Image 1 (cartoon, rainbow, N blue to C red):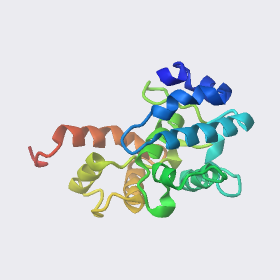
Image 2 (image 1 turned 45 degrees about the horizontal axis):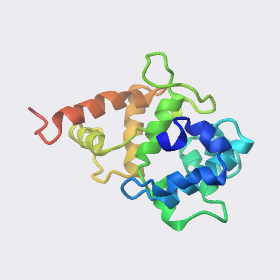
Image 3 (image 1 turned 180 degrees about the vertical axis):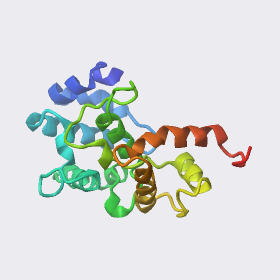
Amino acid sequence: MEMMDNSPYDFIKHHEEGDLQTLEKFKHRTFQPADTLYFIHFLKEFYAEHQSLEWAFRDENDEFTGVKNGFIGFRQRFFNSEYALDRTKKHVPTPAKNSACKRLNMFFRWMVRSNENNVDFGIWQEFSPRQLYIPLDVHVHRIALQLGLLTRTKADWTSVELLTDELRKMDADDPVKYDFALFTMGMEQKNKPFDQ
């Protein structure tokens, strides 16, 4: 945040090439400076034409046809540049490669679900809560297996769809609301046996 003057949106939209020098030192785990610079490059170009990042999640035909197609379309759009780096592709998951897309699903939960309960933002309007998929991490996956909501032992996109389908049976309009309960149970339990 400090490297972007605590105003990332303004920085991305209005930076000049010299402003990027400080970011050439930024890295976090496998996210290297080259990845950061490409993300900023993509976002600057995107925001030059669009007001909201929501529009980056249209499908390959530039239509809003659901979250899964939106994720696939986003990745295609994101790397459709002569400056795209192969090494950066590992940081942008896609259901097309059977990734669980946990962070993207969490981001969509924040942006799409209503802010009525002061939990999510509810900013985006092109998607509805009924289209969302569960953010599947190790905690949610473990609890879903123990509760019998899921039998698939691999935490991938197929499991995301299977678990979300089970949650839709309980609430078709907002299946992802169960994320709070599943995640909290998983965090509280950690590695303890389920019956403790």
